Structure formats: C-alpha cells, structure tokens
Image 1 (cartoon, rainbow, N blue to C red):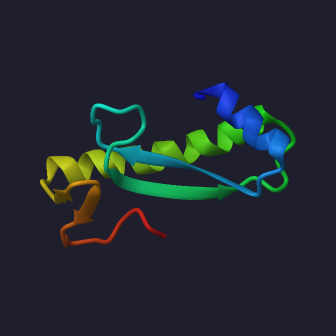
Image 2 (image 1 turned 135 degrees about the vertical axis):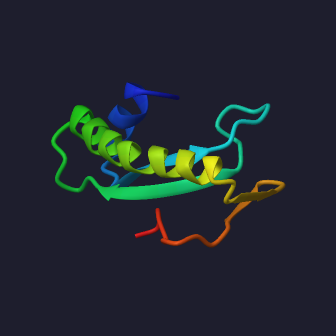
Length: 94
C-alpha cells in the first residue's frame, strides 16, 4: 500500500499517530536502512486527506535533514542500522 491509500487506511482504522520515514534504498520495497523517522498526532484528523497533509509537513522537515546528513557523510550504515555521527547540532529526533 502506498500514497493516499495509506493515509485513508490509517484514518479509517482510528490510528492516533502517523508518521514519515526516510530510508536508504535497497533491493526490497520500503525495506532499506532507516535514516530518520518522525511521528505526528492525527487523533483529531477529520479525513485521510488531513492525515496526508500532516504527514507531508513532517516529510518536508525530515527529508532535507536526511539529505544534509548524507552530504556531510555523517551516516554510518551497518546492515540495516544507521548511526548518525556527531555534528555541531543534533537533529531529527525531537
């Protein structure tokens, strides 16, 4: 399941949180090592479209952060685990 279908299903199920994940790509669909994740409350969402809007907002936060980490060579990958090497400022997990 992907795209709008996911957000509609999450809304219909009555889920309280949804979120976004930035991961590296491997040979399996959505199975690469996770770089960053962030959750958002959707308890008061009124539709799947509203869930999608909230998730998109956090995608716009964490995707540039993940790209920055990659460009700065701060990602250490061991199998499916990603460690973020120290930098001047902690990011992504607030």
